[in-house]
Image 1 (spheres, rainbow, N blue to C red):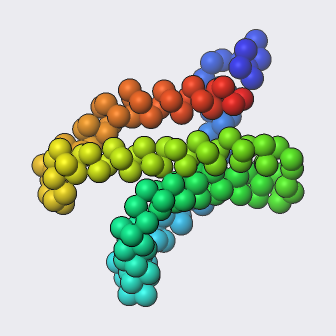
Image 2 (image 1 turned 120 degrees about the vertical axis):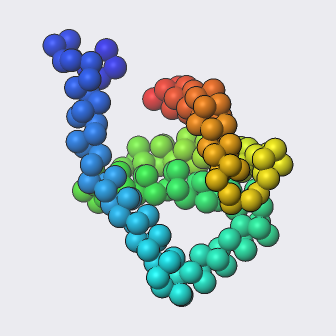
Length: 159
């Protein structure tokens, strides 16, 4: 029954997962907020992140692949080890990475291709109409019709 006991309500496994992931999720959100604030108020961070954008321009899809591997495979596995395994590395962590590294490498390049296509379709201006079009296409078409199903199917296959 997909990890659900017979007397358990369908939503309770989701609630249990949310409770288990609240601290790692808050850590990730805190790091993102710190980076946002540092970018706007700390000139050295602004310079570093702008140089990173230049590296992305030069590396192209290679940068997208590497950054997706870091964000989608390595950081989550590190958080799993730190928060759920109390700092102990298990063989399953390596097995997880055998799936997640190629998966996120592929997804990073797919997302980069999709964003490049949107720049051709709608332009690259940072104006409300352009951003709105990109968000609508991303949230109403790309994510529900491709990204979410592919991710769910492949992770279900892995598990």
